[in-house]
Length: 412
Ligand code: AMP
Image (cartoon, rainbow, N blue to C red; front, side, top):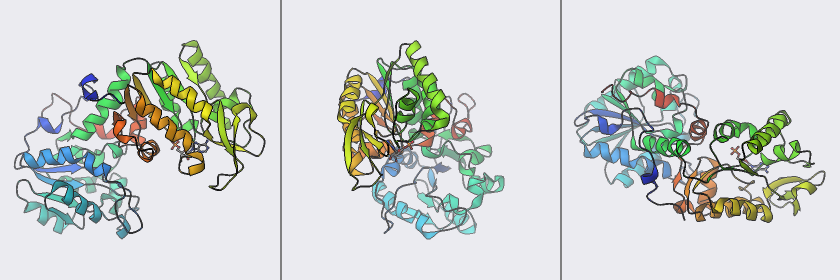
C-alpha cells in the first residue's frame, strides 16, 4: 500500500523557478508547452491518455484564471515535416472531452492562420497547435522558430516534463523571449524525483532494471551514497554477475562495463549499502514467445541459453528486501516483460512495490507500462511521466527545460 497524501512528506523547495501561480494571467495569452506524446494504435486511437490527464490541472487553472490558453506539444518523431499519422488532432478531440470544453485545433503551430486564430481568442478559450515537430526548427532549436512561437503569447508555461531534457525550440528557445514559468506537473515531478532523493525517509531502496548497465549507470552513481539498498534485476544484472566471475551463457553482457560494475559492487559493500542481484532466472535459447523456458540459478546458466527474467527465488528475495522500505525508487523492468513468458518477475515485483508501505516512485517509460500492465498503478505513490527526463533528474543533472525558466525572486 503506497503512502497516500505523499505530498505531505515532501519538501516544497525543490524548484527555484517561478510557477504559473506566481504570475497574473487573467486576459493574457499563455503558451503552455505540454507533453501530449501519447501512444496511438494503427487506427490513430489514443491507447493511453495519462500524459494528457497529467497536464489537466495546469490547463484548468489557466482557464479558471481567465487566460487565453494556447497549447503546444510534439507527438512521435516526424522529422521536421508534416506527417498525418503524427497529427495532434486525436489529442484535440480527447482534450475536448476531458475538459468538457471546446478546443480549437489549428493545423500549423506557426503562420498566418495560427496568428489570426490566437489573436481572436477570448478569456478562457483553448487552442491546440499542430505538432511542433512538423517544423525542423523545433528539434534544431532554431531561434527564428522559437521567436515565431513566442510571438503567439505573453507568457510561457512549461508543463512538458517528458521533454524537459531536450534542447528544443519550444523547451529552451521560447523562454529567451517570454517570461517563463513551470506548470503544476513539472513542479510535481521535480518535487518527487528530487525531493525524495535529497531527503528520503529510510530505509531507502533503489530498484533498477532494464536492458543495460550503461543506461542506468548515472543513476546508480548518483544514488549510491544516498540509498540503504540497491536491487538490480533485468538484463543489466548479468554484467554484474559476469563481473563476479560467473558464466552467464548468452545473457546480455556489456563487456566495457564489467570493470565498472565490479567497482560499484565493491564501493557499495564498503559503504555498507546492501546489494541484491538475482539468484535465479528464467532462461531460453532465444527471445521468442514460444521458446522453451527453464528456471535455473544464476550460477548455472548453460551455454547457448540466455536469462530473460528473474526467477521465483529472486522475486522472494527482492520482495523481502523491499518490504521494510519507507522509500522505493524503481526504474527498469526485471525482465523482457513485453513477452508473457518473461513477464512474471516484473509483474510480481510491481506488486511487491505496490504493497510496500512506502513512498514509491516509478520512473517513466517502460517501468510505468509494466506497472500499468500489472494493474497496480493506483497503488504507487508517484509515477513519472518522463523517461529520459526522470533518469536525468535521478542522475542529479539539471534539465535544460527547467534551467531556462525564470528564477524565483526575479518576477515575471
Ligand atoms: P531500459 O530502457 O534500459 O529500461 O530497458 C528496458 C528493456 O529492457 C525492456 O524492453 C526489456 O525487454 C529489456 N530487458 C529487461 N530484462 C532483460 C534481459 N534479461 N535481457 C534482455 N533484455 C531485457
